[in-house]
Image 1 (cartoon, rainbow, N blue to C red):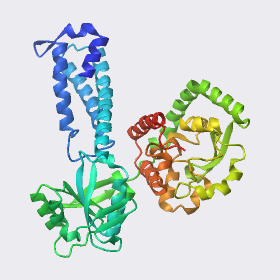
Image 2 (image 1 turned 90 degrees about the vertical axis):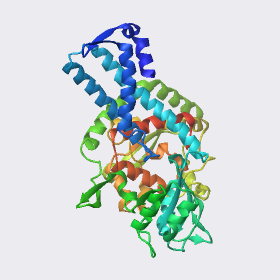
Image 3 (image 1 turned 135 degrees about the vertical axis):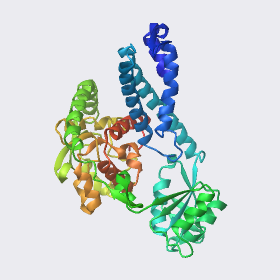
Image 4 (image 1 turned 45 degrees about the horizontal axis):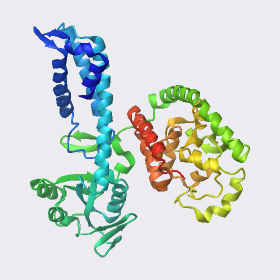
Length: 456
């Protein structure tokens, strides 16, 4: 309706025009109302309103995009086949507006739904069952982002190694234990759960996975299985049925092809445009730094990039010139876990440095790193050489992609997220890259900068 209203504002005369379709003389206003029903029906048939995906993520935006393209193609082909003299300009304007406004509306609704879920409303009540260690890992993963819509109401664990009394203690709190995996069906019904997740390899001694599924099916409780490989492969898992036996197929990561050669090219063009537009900001920040604390204006730091090759990353200097020599005395005040050093009241930060950090202006010179091909706009976090000492094989896979000026780590909390979670987000991005994921990250980065979240 917004797209139609905007279209009629841009071309007010079009509403009164008529067009012959199948020997019917129809007005564009009536055709607009028809497209409203067609659009909603097409979205529904594509699964855009499916309750199976309470936390759809990228899928929430990919379906409208694909549906709009398909409908535009169908209208173009249909008008040619039926010889209906539809206005080409109208079609070319309407469907892009429809897509953009639909994506914006979905994002706004997602934000509102996320706020409700953070307050404990509109949630999917969840019972976890399986080995205590596997349940612990999944519970921590789910609790990190309550906006996804799942709330753990109880767990059934086969071991008692991490269970203390009647609660499973995790890094982010405790969850009540209601017995072993054999008790999961009874527990789900008693707690009015919406879903049950079987984690890893739950040890059933008195029943079977099939028996549990049958019991819960009768009560309309969804059964989900979270194998351990999901943490590694994520969306790269595909079902490959072999004679009725569903096998999990781990597809190749999306780090080759266009992601390898096309992404740096188009991002350099975007970076060039951004540098041109931001030249006045560069000048103002540089002058402010010179007046506040003198030279140098830029801070140069060695980072690890594509293929574990070192490069010199540029930032506007936000600390006193001898900040590195003061670090050893401040390590006891580190507020971050893992290899990072973060301190909210860092005495080394200058007055101008606090301001440019608050609005992420200190990161702007990294656009020159993008122009040199050492970085990209969206990618894994650029690591310090000292951080890589404890990297295992999994963590080193982040070096299969160029580091980014922003990324999933930036839009999910920056300095506020644990080190282990930052590594996991980088791996997810490297193995599941897509243009749509990049667009979502860039859009969310604007929100992070405006709201000034996560930076020290």
